[in-house]
Image (cartoon, rainbow, N blue to C red):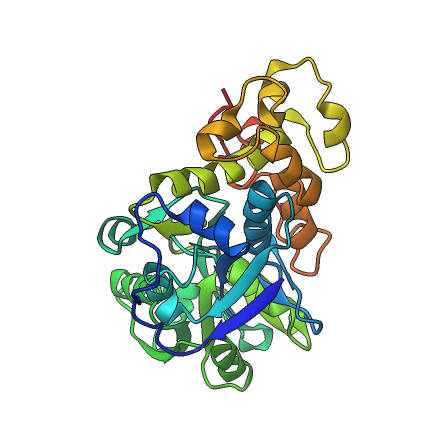
Amino acid sequence: MRFIAITSCALMLGAGAPAFAQATLATVQERGMLNCQVGLPTPGFYALADDGTWSGIDVDMCRAVSAAIFGDPDMVEYQSVTSAVRFTSLANSESDMLSRTTTWTAVRDTQLGLDFTAVNFYDGQGFLVPADSGITSALELDGATICVLTGTTTELNLADYFRANGMSFTPVTNENVNVLVETYLGGGCDAYTNDKSGLAARRSAFPDPSAHIILPETVSKEPLGPVVRQGDDAWANLVRWVIYGMMNAEELGVTSENVAEMTASADPNIARLLGTEGNIGEGLGLSADFMVNVLTAVGNYGEVYERHIGVNTPIGIPRDGTLNALWTEGGIMYAPPFR
């Protein structure tokens, strides 16, 4: 597993870069490594340990695709890129896929040459304030200074919310989330706004998390998920169906611990998922048992969620009763069937 940090504008597409159309899987296989873009280190989603290893719910999407292709989840070169250049890096083929809490929007889906594959987390924007500020509602932020990451939907949603409610604010912007958080902690703004999962993740790493509260309002819809370039439908299908496979596995009760014994299951749904009946992998350019490799190495969607951001982690984001629960349990996590 390797890591490249890209902190300036992405390089322009060179003559040696692969052609977009129907080429990405072959390029990845020939390279022997998946180039997967994540964001600047964020607990729970893409955290960077002192030994250089990455972990998190979005990192596990990269690991799952690697396991599907190579049978090994660690054939990944992680690229940590600021929000301002993330789409340029993907468009220029520096990254094979992007997995970094990126919101699916109409403009991004239709005008930037991107394909959103699947939603792996449903979120919404909120506000973080010091607990001793006395602020209990976002409607009390009229005239406040707000720290916000530039080049994101967060920045646009902030302006929309204040305009819709007849309020004013002063933005404090930066493209580096670490700088922005330090500004907030240093008293450089009255509130910090981001997706609520991001607020919880950042707060978990504060010296005293209890000194900061997330206000109750959710001011946007933020469907987040991995992204690839337009023009390679086969690659988009591969990434999409690896994620859907992890969701189907949870629904069917297939886990990293029981996947080996589940290969003998007589349930046709499980048999198709694990490749013992039919050959869905063939249509993706993968082995019939690609989901066995994914589930053995990474686990199903629920395992990934609970491992990195669930209630028993420092981030502690509940899943029960939220949009991120399976559709069978009151949420909207719903994957098309393997058949």
